[in-house]
Image (cartoon, rainbow, N blue to C red; front, side, top):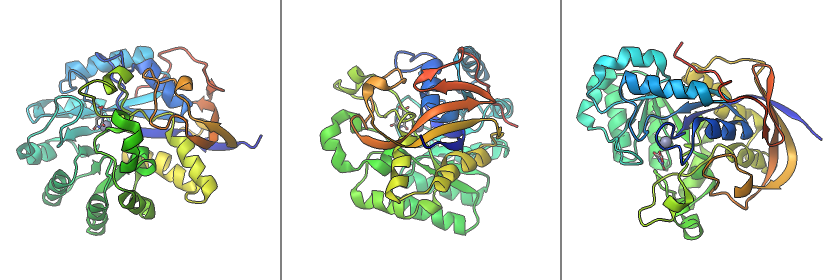
Length: 352
Ligand code: DOR
Ligand code: ZN
């Protein structure tokens, strides 16, 4: 077997649903899925059923994570503009502030008139992250021009948005951006076969738009899964929620493109390790590594997933390259499909 060693990957965009929606996922199943996908660090979003917008909610979430996680984990704080007095303390306990400028899972839509105040109040030691699409994307960039401070634009999906980021970077603004694997590996045409399983925010785009992202991958900072587990029964209901799981499929999809010559291993390391570590100030431990068999051909299958929701929009897809072993801070924590550590052995990351 050919073995490839990579640094532990970092996914700075996951929704682990814990607490309160643990029928979809919890900190144990979510971080187990992370390890099996080669991710040793995840950063968890604040759009829980009770959004994380107070120190009390944040502390409760962190306390649960301490008992359950099996990889390293950090958190984001949220705001609707009325909790600015808690920002200093919250920023010390999290990796950034996440703002939603478009409607998605959870009741978490920010009135943009609060943006300037929020930009001034959130300490510069961690980024402000945005869920913004098209017009709201412009809005975030306008405020950035007025009040420059690090921001990260999550899951951009169109040439319009990527061109804006390229321009902003050329103008020297402190902006980074991420793209999800589903916006790189699925197109609008897949909606016909996926049905509600292809429903997410932002939505899937045309073939041309997807091709533009691939052509300009150099301008993209991070590949982030936006792991958003929902139950199949919910997805097939009258009012299906937005989102798809992704932690276990990101790396095999990317490794498959390495075989096809569209991507290099160095690009994977840049997008899934070096840049997220730098942007979110995640300490790099050289004894955290993943072992890959780059040649193993296998088929992604719902039955083998560790995520509690147990489905993937990539079910039945042939891929090449598989995570065999994960070593976290010197300990083997995952091997050949099995988690080898106790729940609660993961490290909680604070800002530093
Ligand atoms: O599709 C999505 N699902 N997009 C989001 O922004 C949120 C996520 C979720 O939490 O389900
Ligand atoms: Zn998200």
